Image (tube, rainbow, N blue to C red; front, side, top):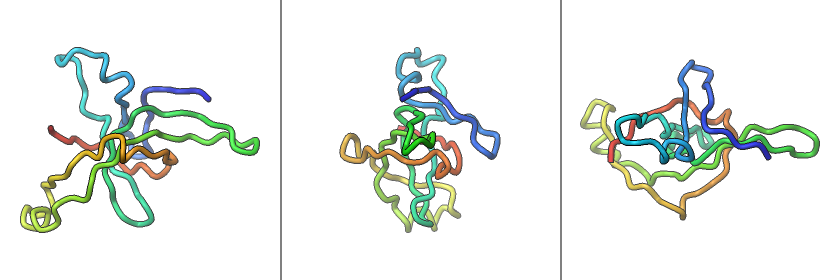
Amino acid sequence: VTRWSRVRLPNGQIARSRWKESTKPLSKLRTSRNVSVNCNGTTKFAEVHFYLLYMVRGVRKALAVVSFYGDYHRQLYEDSSKMYVTMQHLGNSGVQVIEIESIRSAVTIAP
């Protein structure tokens, strides 16, 4: 297993991770550790803990350990011209391993 802190997405964005971002002072913090993820055709949002390479039956897999956010308030999303959402971070109960290919983009999620 090889762990790393950031990845370049196909759209050119750099998605970072909590692993390195949590050690930085607030003045140097970037907000690109949150991502939108394609989950079976549905868009979900998650915070990336870290990225890793893992060998599965002799094939290297690029994976991410993430904490998902809960479902967003759909009516507020529609009323805001699909520009604003509110959701709750699920913490440790929402931790999953996903394939990096399922990450669509880096997103800003304000506390």
